[in-house]
Amino acid sequence: MKKAFILLTAALLVGVLSACDDLTSLLDDATLSGTVVDATTGEGISGAQACLVATGECALTDVEGAFTLSGLPEGSQTIEVSASGYTTLRQSVSLVNGETTEATFMLNPSLAQGEYRVVLSWGSNPEDLDSHLWVPLADGTYYEVYFGDEGTCSSDPWACLDVDDTDGYGPETITITQMQGGVYSYAVHWYSGTGTWAGSEAVVRLYDADGLVREFSAPNDSTYGEDSWWYVFDLENGVVTSKDLLSTTPPLPSSVSLQRVK
Image (tube, rainbow, N blue to C red):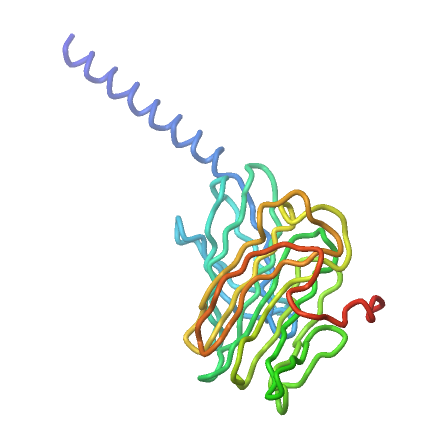
C-alpha cells in the first residue's frame, strides 16, 4: 500500500512538472524581428550577433542586417547586439506573447581618440526628428550642423551630419572629428509627425573612442509636439552636461525656419 502511494505521488508530480513545462513553453511565445544597421549610413550590417541577455539565445544577421529570435519570454527584454568594428549595443524591447515585435538596432562604428558621435533614434511616429549641433567658432559665433548645412568632417567645422532620416526610426547621426574650444550644444527638432515627446521613443546616444558616454531618453511630456525642441546636452572639454529641456524655441539661433523643405 505504501509503495503504491509513493508511486502514485511520483506519477502526479511528474504530471504537474510536465504541465508546468507546457505552460512555460506557451508563455515563452514572443518573436523579435530585428534589423541591425550602421548608424552612419543606415545600411544593414551582415554577420552581426543579436542575443537575448536573459537567456543567452542568439542569432546572426543576414546580408541585409535582419535577424529573428523566437520563443522568447514576454515583457521588457534586453537585446545585446555586437559586430566587428562597432560598439556593442544593449537595447530594451517590449515583447508580447503570440506577437512579432519589430525593432531596429543602430551600431556605432569605432571612433578614434578625440572623436565623438551622436546617434538619434525614435519610433514610427513622429516621421521626422532632426539633429542639430552648434559648433563653437573662434570668433564667438556658432556653426550649426543640421540637414540644411551638413558641415564637413575633413575640415572646419570638423563636424558633419552622416545621415538624415525622414520616415521614422532613424538613425540621424552627427560625427565630430576634431573638438574645438568652447561649448558644443546638441538639440533635437520635431520636424514633422503627430503625437508628443512622451510617445516618441526618442533616444540619443553619445559615443567616444571608448564607447557609449551617455544615453538620453526623451522627456515623458505630453504637451510638446511638432515644431518643438528637445535641448539634450552640452559638451565641453570632454565634460557632458545634461539639459533635457523642451521648448518652442531652439537653445541657440537656428536656420531651420529657412529650410522647411527637405
